[in-house]
Image (cartoon, rainbow, N blue to C red):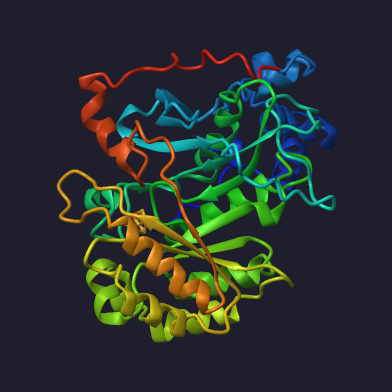
Length: 399
Ligand code: SF4
C-alpha cells in the first residue's frame, strides 16, 4: 500500500516540531507559536485551536482551514475487574475508516517497579505531572486489520483494511491519557494492538519520533516497544533509524520453519534462517534484551520438544521470553494449553538460562486477545457491548 507524502495540514497530530516550524514560517508565524501549538496537542491532548487559550485569535483563524482535531475518539470503552481498560477507537469524521483498539493495562499488585533514575518520567494525565504514579502500559494499534494472516489471531482473520496515519497512532496515547485514573501515568507504550507495525513503517517511525520527543509526550525510547511478526528488512531499518534504542519484540510462536509457516504465513517469506540472524544483528544497547512472544497452543507448539528446540534456536541472543497461553478466539481451532504443560515449557527454558515469564491474561472478563475487541466492534456496535464511559466523558487530561 503506497504511503502518501506527509502534509501537516492533513494530519496535524502527526507533525514533527520542525514541520510545525516550517509550516508556521510559511504563514508568517514565529517558531515559538509553532511549539506552543505542538505542546497543546502532545502534552495536553488538545488539538482544537479554539481551546488553546494562549493562542492569538488571528492564528486560530489561520488554522481553521487545517484538520485541527483529534483524529480518534472513543466508540466503546470497557473496564475489567483488574482495571484493564479496553477502548474501541473510531476515527473522528471518518466513520467508514473502521475501528481499532487500544488497551490500558495497570501493573499487577505484585509487579516490580523497575524504575530507573536516568530515564524520562512517565506521562501523566495532565501536563507537568511528574510525581511518582501508578505506571500503566498502553497497547496501541498501527493498522485497521492486518495483512499477516496469523492463524490464531483475530486481526489476521480480518485482513488489512488500511494503514493508520502517524497522527492516528499517536492520538491513541493522547486519548488513553484522558482515560487514566487519578494517580496513574503511562509508563510503557507497546505497538502490539491491531496490525503489523513494521508493515506501516513510515507512519510508525514518525509516531515513534513523536512519542519520544522531549517537547511532547517524552516517553523513554526503551519504554516504547515495537512488536513484529518478523519483517526482516524493516527490523534492520528500525535498528538503523533508531540506533537500537526502540525496544523490539518478536512474535515467534514456533521453534521451526514447518510449524511457524503453518501458524504465521510471513515465515514463508522470511524464514527463521533470515529472522534469527536479523535479531542477532539488532543493535541493542548494553543490558537490553529482545522480547520474544510465544503463544502456547494446546498440542501444537507447547510440548517439551518445542521448548528444547526454542532454547537452541535463541542461543546467544539477549532475550526475555513471554509465554502466552492461548486465549481462544471465536472460530479458531486452537485451545488453551494445559497448565502443567505451560509450567514444563517454562522450566525447560529456565533451565537453559533464559528469563521466562508466563503472561497472565489481563482483562479476563473482556476480550483481551489481539484484535478481538475491534473485530467484535464491527458487529458489536449494534449488539451494544457494555459501555463504560461515553466518548470524551473522562475528566482527566483536560487542559
Ligand atoms: S498476530 Fe500480529 S502480525 Fe499476526 S495477524 Fe495478528 S496483528 Fe497481524
